[in-house]
Image 1 (cartoon, rainbow, N blue to C red):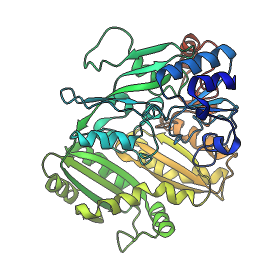
Image 2 (spheres, rainbow, N blue to C red):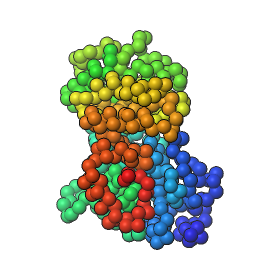
Image 3 (cartoon, one colour):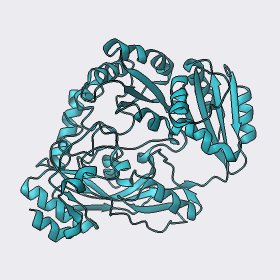
Image 4 (cartoon, rainbow, N blue to C red):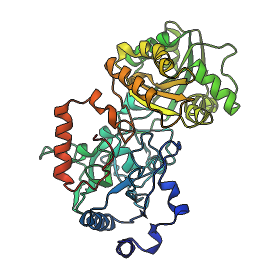
Length: 447
């Protein structure tokens, strides 16, 4: 088997030594660690097809992997699968200036895509903190959202077509990028959020968005989460150029400043904060300043000049870095209905404390779309009692147990909280039709 794989992709692109495969067999948080007999790194769609055909014929399970930046074990070989690394599929086509589109290989990093779009005077609508590592294929597979979801939506809204390989090696390509194409099932949308269980994405046709020349950023302080959430909803309704609305609380800000040596943005402590960004073809600062001035419940504010943008964003984006310094956290990325978001932020620490009194709960997220990142430290990685308590509480509040990253292996036991038996049966039927031998990422998503 190894000889045949090496014949397909080349000797240098089949890794078997433990020190060479270790980075592919664990996630970056250290919570999910698996083993793999081989990491295979194809460089073309033809090689992907040949590898999958061989593995399917032999009944060998495969885990497709991009940047491996997920948080639910979805790209880790926890069942001893072969890892199919797509990072070498990193070709970027020319930006089509007429349509505002580009074709990107599955292994292209988000950062590389952003740079490529910028050179053509455009931008990409999705942005993530893991932009240097996250890849286009993985972002499609998990339907990534990110910082600008409030304005541009997630990956599903950016995908206009794609190329992917079925488990048996069949290549399905639909990369025309037509804005209107009602000629049957939307294959590309099937794969957004499919977590590598239906096919392996190799190329994607993406829409680009305008590159705004003017930006404004403000950090707003509130007495508590309820006022911050209400302000976020008001800003979304009134600020036309709203580009981002990120929430965090005093405990998280204090941790970031202490752990990473950042200066505090305000002289006094406050209960909750909103980082609000606006962008446009004309200066959005006057509109942002006016919106801030009329914001109810505001107790302090810092409107940044361009030289301070990076500093203000650091208070939000470096939460993950600061939390990880406390040990491998339980990361539960969830969505709540707007009406229940403030209640959830105020009460979920108590839910955690009931099952793990020693634990610490850290909350931050994308307030405009109800997406809260629940991070829990002080609990052993294998102890899922806090996961169970929080995810059941999320479902009871009418929310989703997965806002981003997917279900993976980590959330499989709780899929039933959001999906009915009929829905799961439908998922299985689609999976069986496209991957009858069950070799594609068999341990994720479906319980």
